[in-house]
Image (cartoon, rainbow, N blue to C red):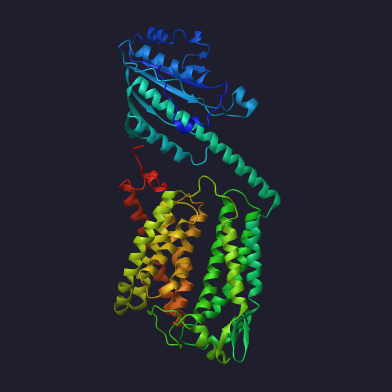
Length: 570
């Protein structure tokens, strides 16, 4: 049989092949005289030096890799040259779970190069082949790469369910199969080494319980909790810690009917709650393994970022210019000057002097918890980010940054028609980027980054709210990311996407309503707005799925998880 030269990139890592390489084949001549055709084709196999085992269904060949491929091609060519239509099925195995050699050594080495190409066979064949890299992380990337390799070899005919169809001279087809099979085997070996290193690292994590990133995360949570009892706001007549300020605001705000600080006490109390929750989740993750470990860490990061957002809101309301006083302006895009003006007036504490050290330490603590939780475990092959993932994120950021920026005008316009109810429904558009990014890329952090980067792009385009939109992007991304993490990034049906949209709307609700002053509204009206927001969030999730499916149908996303689900020509 004519053999192919292995690709140059594979030769640099090739070593002596293991003694075992196997193939099991069956020959089916479509004629009543099939017995003599089969016997003639397999004649001489026992003189090849290969291990040969024939039964009433198939024949096994084991031994030298090049010789096995040679004999497979020779047997098919001999049967085909009889002029009858012949079908051959072949199972190839590199490495051999259950075989004596593999059980003894526990090792599967890289295949050695194929023999030089000797020319055409003169036999035209059609072939359907499938590749199964067993136990290899990221196996779909490997399979799609080898499909592309056969397309470049000039023998790819078409894709079909579960197989790729090849057509051409027997030598060319066998060369394409051999080249892809060898490349896949070599890549599987490299990936297997990485898996062993990851498993070893995981064993160390389990034994030591806490790694440095986890220690950083738990330490950050403890720092934040302690900072809540240090000075947060300094007024002419009194200095308040976070805990004291929240306690003083609860009774003081009970009688306040309007103003941006309505609900500020809730935001303040969310700080220690978020710190405790994030710290506990990181600790639980250190005692967990598998998908649960990753979920706990991501939930911890989400809780830390939520607390960070409230702390930044407190800081921003004190140091950024805004609309002073307590007038209720529900549609105004602004930073409420609550701490600087209204809190001091409400509590009778005098003029605002400055922000206390506790606020800055809380920000530092939450940042440490979020970073530590995210970096708590090295990325596995399945979740490792690729260049095309970052490129897609950049595209989504630019496109949705422009959409978000332009959507402000319809959002303000609808207030005159449907008041806050219309605005709550229109607000759902600002959740779509994170939902769509998560749906397409399907890796931890994709939804969070897609929404946050879109908010950043909106700022660059001149959004009136300014840099505070970065925090808004954080908050609007959390609900979707938490939902996807809860499924282990494995479920992407209508139910998951709708729940993710609702979660995005609900998790962002305290931040959005605090900035807009909605907590000053009548409780019955707030319940109505909540219902509208839930509906809007569900619609945003459904819209993200529809958009993703429409784009995937064009073939533009074939190198992403969503595209691979929908591809029929493989």
